[in-house]
Image 1 (spheres, rainbow, N blue to C red):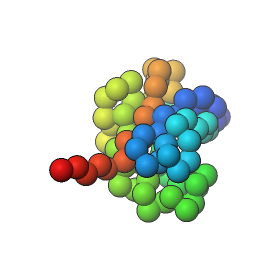
Image 2: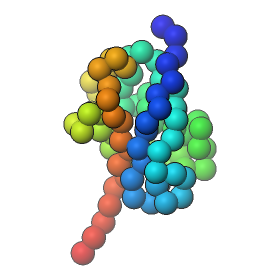
Image 3: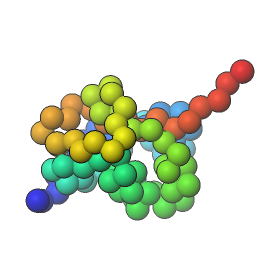
Length: 85
């Protein structure tokens, strides 16, 4: 399985403010939440402790342990925890 460039990894909250609203990331043809967060942590090591707390949505649906096929992906979003009052 070769790697495929993913053009749109959308970041939200403080991650978008600190890094960028979108980043490019290479992922294998099949991946899960851990694969995405590990790849982001490797690319942005100073944010590693933040990425481990994030949720991942693929095509506007949160993913957890399920494996996603790259050719079925239209959008990937990284959503950090938020707090409010």
